[in-house]
Image (tube, rainbow, N blue to C red):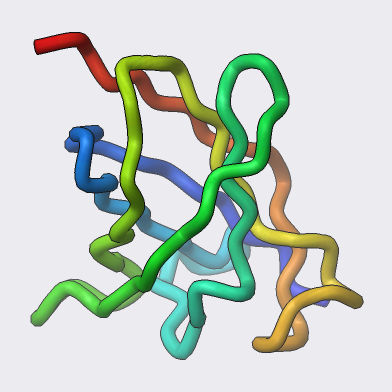
Length: 101
């Protein structure tokens, strides 16, 4: 398994941008699909990830689409055995907040 770091930014009611990089060389992880990720709100409730799409020209970055309310969220890769894209293990989750209004 390759250890990876997951980060996120630009949280809105429509989703966020997520970046996954290999810890060994900081290169971006490509080929991930929505089913490789898990998104929960602050209360631990599961959120549906509608889709993810690679950000053009930025290896390892994806636009994540989800319908989110004003809340805090935790995003991570699923456990390696549960992932569609095999071979990666997250070293920790990333968090984000969607503000009201």
